[in-house]
Amino acid sequence: MILLTKYMRLMRRVLGLLFFIGYIYSVSAQEKTDVLIIGGGAGGTSAAIQAARMGTQVTVIERTPWLGGMLTSAGVSAIDGNHQMPSGFWGEFRQKLYDYYGGASALSTGWVSHTLFEPSVANNILKELANIPNLTIHYNANYSTIKQENGLWQVTYNLDGKAQTVTANILIDATETGELLPIVGADYRLGMDARAETGETEAPEKANSIIQDLTYVAILKDVGEVKSKKGLVKKPKDYDSKNYECACDLKGDAMFNSVSECSKMLSYGKLPNNKYMINWPNCGNDFYFEWDGLSPAELEVKVQEAKNFTLGFVYYIQNELGFKNLRLENEFATKDALPFIPYHREGRRVKGKVFLTANHLEAPYKYNLSKTGVAVGDYPIDHHHAKKPDAPKIEFIHIRVPSYNIPLGSLIPEKIENFLVAEKNISVSNIVNGTSRLQPVVLGIGQASGAIAATAIKKQVPTSQVSIREVQNALLDYKAYIMPLIDVSASDKAFASMQRIAATHILKAEGVPYKWANETWFYPDRIVSEYELKTGLLAYYPELENIPASGKGITFPFIASILKQLYTEINEQRIKAAWKKWNIDQEYSSTTVLNRRTVSIIIDQILNPFALEVDFQGDLVRY
Image (cartoon, rainbow, N blue to C red; front, side, top):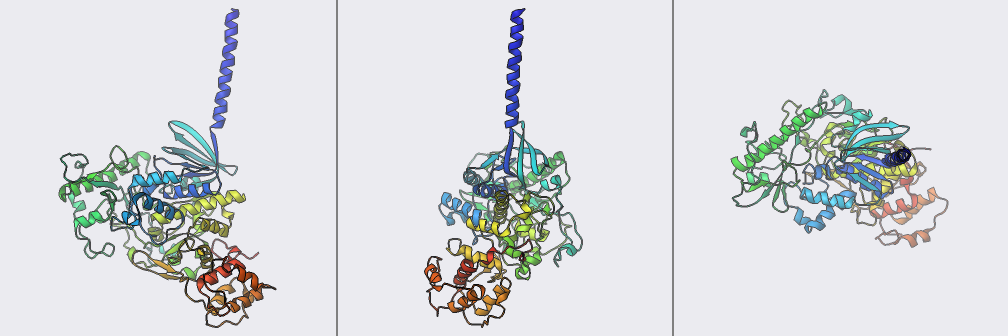
């Protein structure tokens, strides 16, 4: 009896200790982070890396085993746009691709893009770039609940069959379709906007819920003449060859310049190592369904239909067109050899602090929004609606815009605090989404979202109260473009000065709608007239109104007259001594006619107008 009593006491102690250990474990499992990002796609990855590099603790929840989203997990490994604007993280990622494959020419394998690559290679590069302090990534993880209490976000997610909880100060929606927006109660748009709401003459008269076609990409590989049947696709159920009959016929098409050969259709997305990305819009594998409101089971059925449609196109290529040397390559190590996710061109778009429309893109200097830019793009407005014949007919490709930037306010919701977007879910019109959805732009959007979050954490302010100029300067520190200046290289030592002065509109750039790579030129070597500079400065320094200014080129004495008007003293010797330190490559002389690069540096270094804060609309904040 005594032994039994001692045994019972011992067991109570053991059970108590186990309970205590379990309690400690459950408490420690309550993960805490500064910034929580749901979605490790193009935007989510760049947001995470930017925020972590700026010193904040970042956690990413990604439902696939890969990073990169549309770049990798969806298989869209042909970059559209921004070839001459390698902004920030996009430029860094591209350089890694150059290093891996052996230079730019090794990636120019297909005619749709200058930069094509294998999705698996890009995934490995992104994971390498993300292997940094402050950044934790949970792969194969699915969130289940999201709530905000006492100013903090609490998210539960499933990892390896176990429920986990993470608490964060800032939550970022980096999902492919803006799926967090209805969950957190953010107002959003979906589908085509009404003309009365956007003011865009090209928009339909009435709004609708029609989104762009999505695509389930396939990767094929040229295996030559082999007897093996590996990679040959079986005829899918409901296969109909008529769906694909015009795939090789695009004579006179505005987009593709007379594609009339099947081999040219296939080489559209040719990748390194004899692989082919099948993401073909014309009688190819675009597919339409309205996913909003579908249950998980219904969504799974429609996704499988999209997969079957792509497999049907591959079957058509192999059997009807006779390219049996092109075999389905299991690039993704999935059961069906298809990507982890479909390529969503469009999702829900948050209603933000600002609403970017085609009107802003067409006439950037009619508005001040471009002063608040945080990401850039140059691709034309390109929509896919062929698989939805009753969609309103809009000649999207003929909406002519120059290159553009994305305003910071389009990443911040109207009402919900400490919640940001970082993907195709920014506050833009349906029409603008046709260009802002492209990979380099989304990488830039993500980088900007990460910079906003990190700035808010560092300054201990809500995301809606961050300094726009401070976020822009943080991006410039990482060689990200805030203005789409095609002729101002990030390697130029005056890059940040010219970007800042262009973003103040003191010196305006010149936009040119041009083919498949729209442009904006700053012309750094162009002479600045006295009148041009005075006019640009007046918005910031109205006291210069009475300074006489002609149309002749600026020399330093004119600059000195402006400085004397704004400052009681000017030490010309100090300026002369700093001339080379400021990386000015023109000669210091009273007779030297100064160009835009030099004037940008002087105005930036001495007057620093960029320090004057602007609001979300780009208007000066007068304190």
